[in-house]
Length: 457
Ligand code: GDP
Image (cartoon, rainbow, N blue to C red; front, side, top):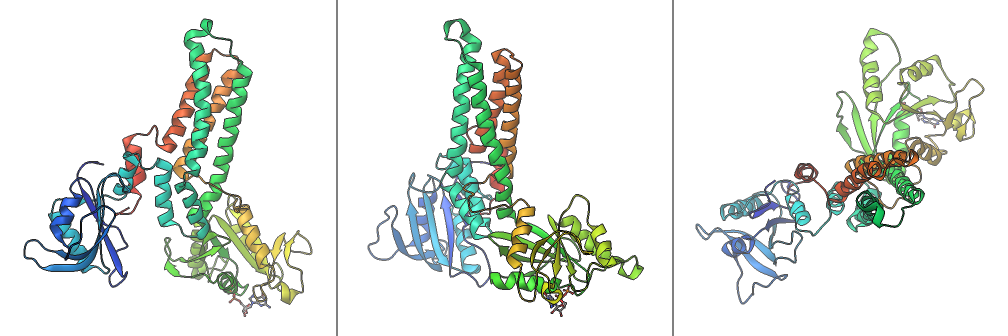
């Protein structure tokens, strides 16, 4: 990414006939000049920083008024990018705002790439990399908890925690490297104490890596395939889950052919339910399509919820479906219609011809809470309340790499190898942590991180 020049983009969502306000954002050395060229503010309004001007965006070629707008000028360095930023707050919709952007581009700005405003904020020292990534996560959050986690990242929670671990490693590295060069001139180093500190940092990193799974669930959501033979209550369960939550259940054409997906949020975790209605476990040729759909759903799912009818008992068809579930899949067997069968709800061990299963009733709602809790527990969601910060996939891989490097350094300690054997791995761990916060990061990595952002951010 080029980091010079003046960039511009529509910073708000672009949709025809929607949004009462649309913002065209300009950042860079020419931002104010472009603003002055295109904006006519009547009366005695003065171009002061952080003041709102009222007026019109005018095409300088013919004086035509393109939109009535507000203009906000934020002079460098008191802006998001630390460059001079000008925002036109226009009327929403598509046509006028696109014309305003075109005028801005004609006046000398170039179109911003996705994430380029945030990248400038990072490069100009306004944000560390974890905060910049948190902005992207806040924008794409699909649940309230995911948004809270992103805000914690934006407040610097992740940066502080990782920064502190990196500092502790740097302290040890300094001691070790000093010994490599000037062993005789320095007091002896307690290898056990160094090893204990490295082990402690490694433990914290491993904890963060484990918690990342929960954060990932909050961010990405969970793909749940609900399978079961006809009439066991799959649709009823879908209704039960979506009703209580008062969540939107949208039917989207699935990413996999022939699958319908619905989205809802349970206990703060966004779920994508893969609808497999119509699946029958049979070898009948006509039913082959149903089986194919079941297989697609099962392959795409993080967890399989296999429903059966407690009133009908565990039938050979249920067993056949059970055998369709891949070995590696996370499976929860749930018995519906506990009311009709006169059975208690909750987790019930195998017995009386039934497999171990979670019993509930989609009709009365009894056992719903237990079902949801068990579903989330099996997927590693655990209790989410205590989760303060969570690494994204990029950060998690780097934290895991740092932990592995520390394990290698500790190996050198166990074998009483010379100090320089410790420092190689320790340096690798420090570098990996620096890549998370952006202190040691290549341009290629930065481009990848920011290109995932939306345009205008
Ligand atoms: P699907 O074919 O698996 O989607 O099953 P449905 O959700 O359409 O349910 C089939 C029938 O079972 C409907 O008549 C439901 O009212 C009934 N049903 C669903 N859940 C329950 C339950 O928990 N208890 C009882 N008694 N009936 C249920």
